[in-house]
Amino acid sequence: MKKIFAAMSIALLATTAFAQSGTNSPYSMYGIGVLSDQGNSFNRGMNGVGLGFRPHDQINYLNPASYSAVDSLSFIFDAGLSLQMTNFKEGKVSKNAKNASFEYVVGGFRAARNLGVAFGILPVSNVGYQFSNKDTSLASTTTYSGTGGLHEVFIGLGWAPFAGFSVGVNGGYLWGEIDRTVSTSYADASAKSLKKNTNFSVSNYKLDLGVQYQYNLGGKDALTVGATYGLGHSLKTDPSLSIISSGVVSDTTEYVAKDGVDFPTQISAGVSYNHGTKWTVGVDYTLQQWASANFPQDKGNAYVPKTGLFKDSHKINAGLEYCQNPEGRSFMSRIRYRLGAGYSTPYIKVFDKDGPSQLSVSAGVGIPIVNAYNNRSMLNVSAQWVHNDASGMIKENTFRINIGFTFNERWFAKWKFE
Image (cartoon, rainbow, N blue to C red):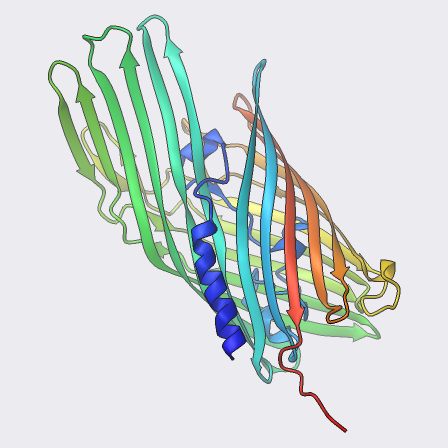
């Protein structure tokens, strides 16, 4: 148990390593920012598929019901990071930006018969941008900037009350701060400059429920259906708007939007097909109900919560994994090959128009780490291409490398001496 608590402490200490900005996207100007990919390194090789997956050697936090499948003798600890380069293009103007971020830390183990436990830290959203527009007719420059993001620390349980059926829950603590500024200055020093700053911080709960049912098709074949429900609720935060004008006479006006930010309800469902340990194929669908979520709006002389500023988003992913023989003696036969693709609609609106939709594809490998003490740990590496596009808006093309280390130790094995 001391080792378990030590690993959980490492996960909690890792909160200090989370970068406040894992993006340079101007679309992070809206809402809670750019939504982070959920799923760890093995999911990301399949473009984030996993609602119907029940791995015994990975922590699949996309569906907490899967924790009941974790190997009874192992303690699993997984950490991941990402490196990405994004090209932004508008008309004939093209810019590149690079980011690196520490993505997640998760761990898990079997606590009792048919009962698995998991814990970890995950990204939820990212805000990070800075750009300027010049108006030659007014001899002015307007600068837009934003930083911050939301993160989650969670602990989850997965239980199989009878063969084939599992339920699970992730209870999380959601925290973070988002700060955005728009400032306008003039070449004429006597003219008033104007600065608008919006800010809110979050310290609230997050709750996700999951269910899975596995049906044996005969022989080595099995079909698993999974679903999750993420509870939507008010984040109980009071966003503020400060308007500061400076010049010969300076003035500051402040507004507060009481209970101004909601987290949306999320409903997801997926199915996977397994042919023994050789083939796994899955398809997931996710709906996030942003249209009914509150968010503050600047109305000139007021700052008030309002629904309808966003739209419901839809996401579908498909992916597969192939491994010739996970328990084979040949190193090459134990490598896992992964492919995936997905499409999603935006939750944000830009000047009352739908934001960019997203098309993505990925490929990855799971490379076993073999030494004298352990042959169950794994290095997961994947590459992903993400294309964000909407008519008349900035186009984004991102190439991302995800790297994850899964440490699988047999902490609970009972040794026999003769």
